[in-house]
Length: 146
Figure 1: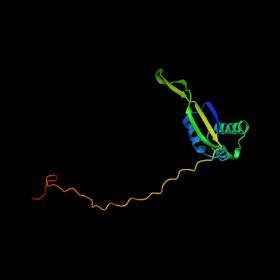
Figure 2: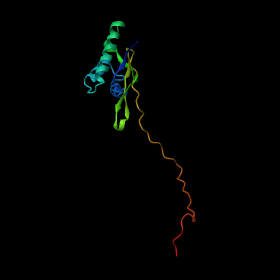
Figure 3: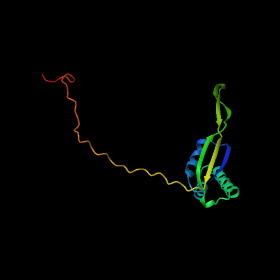
């Protein structure tokens, strides 16, 4: 079963929130909480609060055990942008975009799929054919014989 929690209108740039979200994606809840508590980024606090809210929803509403939960899905999307103006030299104005983020987290109690492993590098066997060389033509380089 999946439990969904949303954080809408977080007054932080989605790009900065994704840096923290990538740290905890596909982790167990206990490990993710520890990671967020000790991450020195401003986005860690709202993500930790959202994670704790999703865990509370799972325990209270769906009677799921905390130890079986892991983060199966975590997205950070852009929300509406507040547009402001900053005065510049010679009477001009420069735009300021105050970005917001939407964060969606899904917790699952299903068995976590095994991580994909990379295949070991195996060099290809060399070809049995000899390399073909182009014949040099005499008109490409002038001779220096005198």
